Image 1 (cartoon, rainbow, N blue to C red):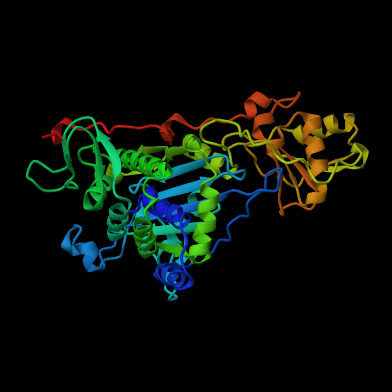
Image 2: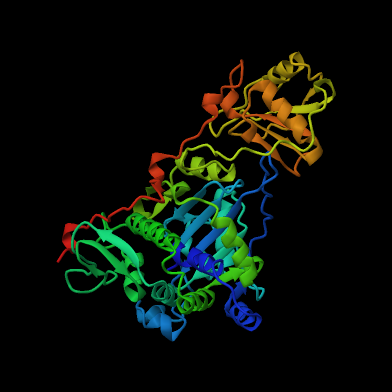
Length: 488
């Protein structure tokens, strides 16, 4: 039952303190490590922004494993003890390339999707599923690396790292931090009429600082909040996450050396990470990157979804259109809060060559999921460039891969200035100029946002986070609506 707060808390804590070599090695030894991905598909590389910076994506996983005495004491049916763990909480943390904003996308545990082929570290092969499977089963197919592969299969978003925590880890972290403020609109008791079921959470109306097992109950509660769905639980988790970040940034928990050591101990004991985050130093470096984002530029969201029918009633599926729009915004490093970055990109180190010497290949990427490519669009844009003096412009008619948004790729720093000159000539925002190893020269993809003749429609190039994603700002102090059937 990872909550974003518990995992990222570990990073923030480690980034705030120092330790002697022996203690440093002790903390390193606490951290459990596993392979990043168990899938057989190579993840696409990031595309750098105009300043050569790349984003960072971290998958946060909460395991319901009941394979230890500590976890078994924290609840769950006895028949689940020792069973394959489930990835009950999955959140993707996206840190923008310029470090100006951070987005979090939750996937409900009840999401139905196809599982990719996964090969466990011990060699056991889990074939790709032929039918839709509940997403939380990915963890039992070899470990967190299969959860990473499943996310990539669905979203196409490159995952750079993962962090995983279990029930006992959440409790130890909540105890170490000293409490997180949460709010409910009425007295709440997450128990069924027969006294069974639910998380057992019992709180009075208003704000309460929860820690230990009570924090875990908050993060597990669905019966008692709003409509009793997993979507309501995700909302409560986002509120907890926001509150924890605000508490940490006050600095009040980080001034006592003893408390700081307890936090570092709890953090490293609680985490399982990929091998790229296997030391305190690497966690510290990650913390330094995360700390650059102001709280007001943190945005929580949930994958847009719709309920299934028939045997899958009560389960959810990605909502056509909206879910892909959200995933695409993350893939293309677009802030979910809709605000443009105030951090100006660095001036290209290499100035532009004379426009007559700049070679540009233009391709037609105007196709969409429902419409074919617009005939002649690559040629039309190529003509605009030639009229602007880019006489070495050609049409790449062999590549018509669809592109939602018009963009320009260049392969190396010495062509950055040239690529930006192309963008300026057509009125394309510089933010849509990216460095990429996928091209050998300057490549302009005319996207689905430019299907009509004429100048580039900048206003149409802007994207909004779908309302169905339920975006929540990091500074919002929410209060969970209580189901009247679960009050006391």
